[in-house]
Length: 496
Ligand SMILES: Cc1ncc(COP(=O)(O)O)c(C=O)c1O
Image (cartoon, rainbow, N blue to C red; front, side, top):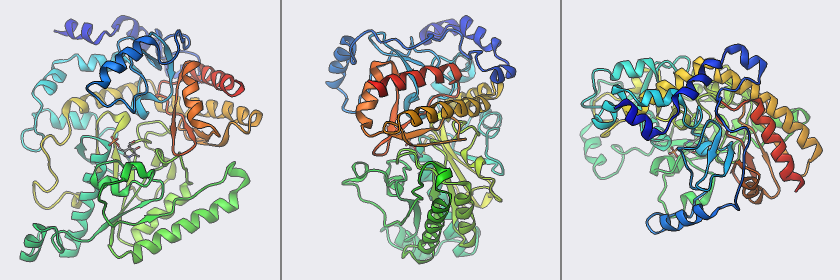
């Protein structure tokens, strides 16, 4: 069974394990020791993009599946580490990583090993409805994986299916908590009026409460999460939305060191407005949701002081503080959780995650955030043990290879290189941002969309965010030698 699965996965355990053994913490300091020994040495592009095989496969796929968002068709059996291979054999250095969701590289041997176990096979073929029929080892899986990675101060987790689902269930937890407080605690039963009105979507059973989010935020595309998403109209058009408020998110000016006073004033303005909205909005605000770095909305940053201020406001106004770490979480900013950069006095009430975790959900600490009755926060699967097992392997890989520190170090190096490029080509690299935030780096490009397309021709798979940002979202195994290749390719593109 094991070898059959391995051959289907097309992993090369011997070579990959060699890479694992060759790593040591000291090598992060030395830099050049590669995590993945059998990675290609560089990108290589053999055909026009898309090549003939990609075009033919896309045509076939189009008959049964909407391909209008297609980027490329990949050959995952040939993709290794930081390199994504397409159907025509073109090899791309991948700094987009499946929309920021691949943590430790393609065909990672440690993940393949975790996939090739009786525990995983059991989780896959007899998928439990976790709320009703969890297996005996579910507690062990959660404790040895998800909870080991829990943000400081949070010791419980609710598992979900996607980033949007994680946020929506966190919002539900916030609403139920709020009404429970108003009602007088978990033991006070619902009123007859609440039971009746809930069934016709009216208050008080369906209360007119709200979640406050920020201008340009992205929190997902399901119904509830979409109401807090404010990045692009195309995501929201034609979909009924809740009457929920948005606060301004700081529009910082770059370089930061030249705009210290203005930026601090801008953050103060946004904080004041956020507090005013919380106090005055006609549908009382149960929770504030915020991304540590607004990602889909254009890579918009704010300082730790802004987030500390926001945390204080939520405390003062008895509003929950939800930090959406779906894109920033699991190491990419050079800390395991991006909100670790803020040094908060008290942890967020809820932290949502997905993407690089390869599973999803929210962490919390206050037991009162568990609804007072069963089945109030519930669905068939409530997550997926197979994905939680994979997360555990991802976490082990991150820990054993010190990948968060690698990302911090490589990020500083890459940022330095980009800063030099920005000085040389100020028109091409504008508003460079993400200093000290690992590899979570972005800049504005005057012809962004064209730039992203052209990047493929030099062998780089790179993404954008917002209207004009080029965003870097490499994996946690991205190292200095990859940064050197990327910088060289970027310069080639800029000069072309
Ligand atoms: C910050 C943030 N929250 C939520 C989501 C939604 O996640 P999903 O696409 O898995 O529903 C995303 C997706 O890009 C995101 O970046």
